[in-house]
Image (tube, rainbow, N blue to C red; front, side):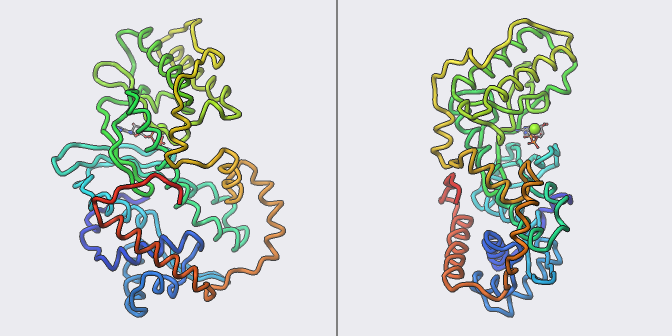
Length: 377
Ligand code: ADP
Ligand code: MG
């Protein structure tokens, strides 16, 4: 994974961004977007587009791939990054870029700054790129069909994270202040201090333990479970108080496995305190203790993060990155009969729709006053 060469941002023209956006839109329905389709939905002259695409490939913002039944372009991580960063820059949310400060298993974290040089934290979500590697060379059709999913998964993850962070921040939970998001990127307050895993000694061990357990209960009473409440996702500020980060996996207390997730979060804290500080307490919260007094889960769902757990699981299944790869393989026998997509056949309707989506997206990205609406479209 290359580092962010943001200098490129300055050299990319509006036409470059139009082409990148067209490929992005095309990738909603096609793993590889044929050059002719890009030209058509970018609404630029055909010859010109091919030259632009070639240069974008040279800068590794696009890649060109051809297989037996396919040929076309797709966005690289960097290409997707630039679309989001350009939008955030246009909106004047960020003005300069700093160092990478973290590599999570599903994200890259950078420091950035706004126009007044206030430091901020940028989280780039990266999902769905490693999981399908195992099944990648099985069949052309399958392999290619799965490739577009990372765009979708990464964007959903960022959207979900922002929505939860905002709902929590509004309720004065100790979380970073959410600033903005675009595509797979979330901009938030930069937390000073470090993750709890770096902490070797605290003044008041019992106090910190109680504070963390109270947070788990307070979240639960709001109707949510963090789901990954470990020493890497708990930051400790300079006053020794916890700040919680990393929200894409949060679930409602109505989730069928809620109790399991709740107990796991509690266990994480207990085991860390035992291991690190030799601290054990017989006092810890149980799922049955929760007394719901808020509907944070519902609010986040209503703000646009609507997919039910069932839908989500089904979606992951469909994309071959669910838990049951074997099921996926079993059902793929049927897929064998499917005719591979013809790169030349796109309905007039589809082209018109995509073209409108490209225009709308460019409008949104270029106009700082049109703000993000959290939705799933
Ligand atoms: P992942 O989902 O990949 O685990 P996290 O959100 O947990 O990503 O971030 C990974 C690491 O980056 C954290 O452990 C922390 O060290 C750092 N980090 C994340 N968000 C912030 C922030 N707002 N301020 C400072 N550091 C952060
Ligand atoms: Mg994390």
